[in-house]
Length: 529
Image 1 (cartoon, rainbow, N blue to C red):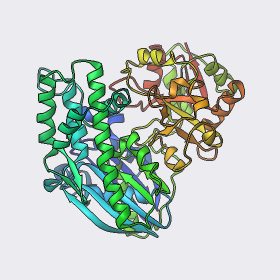
Image 2: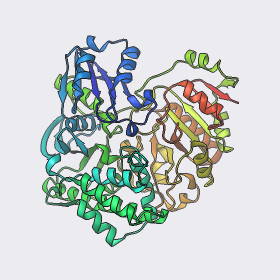
Image 3: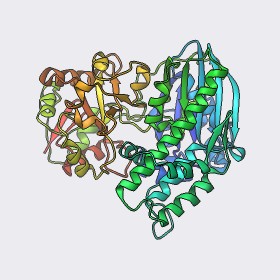
């Protein structure tokens, strides 16, 4: 059996992962340690993340059996890190191996990756079965349009530019704001047509190429002509951006289904599938049995995909298996938490689920810090902020404390046992454990949980919690349910706007000190002012 280090860096969203004997040991994103969002830190290397994984695992990179980088590779950095002893894997191959081999799917599976371009490709499609992957389509960056470019350059231009000529909103960081605005807008034939000049789809082809250049020119022109000078106009544009994305990609999915009708399970990876509304539309296709969105769907997930690729090559990871959770980052002991707490004048007590559920029921905002931090963009019960979902004014309170934009949605966490009571469609519950797609909310629940429901389309992006996978998270939900009759809570990421999700106890204590949260549950203790 082997030890395998995987790395991605030199573009955006660098990370380091480690697999030993076919088991995931650690996965760490660079932004958690630099405290700079990856969208604000292009060309970064997996420097701090590689050092932190070495230290936490007690395994030097140079002593590991295999070192593998994902294209595009920062070769000078890679040579220094590994003593010039490393392999390479293509960008979309890493995406697809990460997705398929963590899907737990058996039988015939369509495996699709799609983003703004990694090395020289924007998309790959594999047919998968019984642990085997067969490449059927590879879309070259120079000859293919990219829906991800449509989103990236729309994002970076819609708010205008700063004195350095850079977008106020950043691609690879703020696309979710446009997605959040989309349900508030409406169809506009002229805007749809203009977007359609940048990209179209027919017969397995996204065209024309150079979507980035065309979109940048279009958005700049629209900005100057006043298309974005009110909130409503931004919402109308966002609606049409979302609509054309869904229309074109669902046409592609239809063509895939017609050509390969026996493949009814879908794996998805790459930055495009951070779009939870698109994922919802795919999941709702009547011919689809199940979808799985790789939880670290963006480029941050490539380092783990590289490790899995090598483990599969070595015969140490032979078939798709399901992840218990995504708490794959750095952990902190009770002793280290206590030592850090001595710097502050907080009250402390032993954690009691019943007491914290009472606080939640009374409207307190609770910081939640348990185990290793999450790998990927979502807070999934390791570095979360928890609030009751029953009061719509919660939005204004959280946005004020976290300095977030009003359009950014808040998501529910729900015990698996009650998922079908609250949401329509029961497909793809495994993927919903990682908060990767939206579901329509049943009518009778909309007014009960307004803080976690999109106000216009009445959808939510739930995280399903299984007791055996996240016992402490499930327990606090169950205690709150006993008090309120509501089997879910609001879960948002433990960070203020424009900073990465927190990593360590010091950052959590600072949030408590500043009054961002009312109480802090951190490992086995609770702290308050």
